[in-house]
Length: 195
Image (cartoon, rainbow, N blue to C red; front, side, top):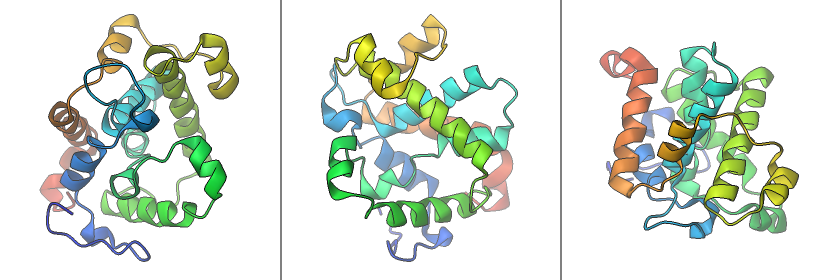
């Protein structure tokens, strides 16, 4: 990692996970294989912020620690990238154990449960699909009918937030905004030596 940490993909240690590495990597990983409108890629960091915003709109009383989990749902992609769904279908589920071990390490590192409860997984999935619908129709050239077929109905997100989150940012801005939101949600983790 850029921080100098070495991460074992077969047995990742939470002690080798740094939020700065995650933010840096996710801000440079393209969603939709880079096939989006705009001068910049639409990064996984920006997607993660959008998913967290959608989850807040869908679940206004969601606990701060669970909002942190929503934000971090794609954290393993700072190491493994974001393969597009058709490619994942071709290779099968062979990548899933690596992804799960990375998420386990990230979760432990930042005080989240090692295994997320089914209710949290459902919230993440619902918000992720909602964000994918918005990205597909606003950035990736999908018709609304096609997006609804793949991702379900459009989520409710006010027009101001939608414009803000769906205009691709440069990598440095995406990294900065991801870190800012992480520390807003993580609270005093940094002061406890966990971040």
